[in-house]
Image (cartoon, rainbow, N blue to C red; front, side):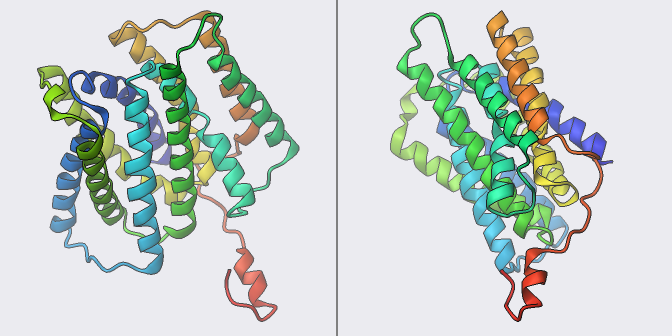
Length: 309
């Protein structure tokens, strides 16, 4: 079951980069993302109501909801949508593939659930080298493209922080409630950002961008994030973030097939270097198996008479 959901995530989120690009044709980025999650929130809300899910939240639930709403559904998607107006969808996906590196660092030095071994450090250096290669162009790179690249990396960082946070606090959080409240917060923030920074006079609705919006809301959000947060409870954070190793390949293929985006030899080499580095850094054994139960640091501290950390 985990392997099927994992593969489905890679395919869905690999395709959403192209769908975002199509959906942004005639629609400003923050408004496009806000409308996507407005529709998703309505759908998930009906599921929550049908399941009669109680709206009681524990402290850990509130942490997860705020993390998902602010870091993932707002800042991450605002950055990604904004980036896709300035760089190719495949390049955005490739830059986002640095998320596992960030997740590995956070897991090692923040939550301390994983060790950053020399093999991981080597992989990180290789991955950074690939990113530098991807940034490098023999001709002049405009400030607009550089800003887009930076936004994509910012989105990856926000997504990684949210993943580690939900992994730490969300073992007992209801997946549907987390998605509903998180998407609702993200929707309000995105639409508010759009109201402040974007003009409605430039909005043009077409059959293509409407279909892209519906696909992103239903498949790319409701289906994908339900599977994603289910897998958060089943797998280690860095193992789950490995989806971003495959997503750039899918995204580049979709971008080439549907948007006729150019894939240069240098880009292919850079992708290979990035993916090799990330794989070297964090590929675990038994990626689709449940995480083994490890005695938390807090349990050790209690033996000394201290409270949980």
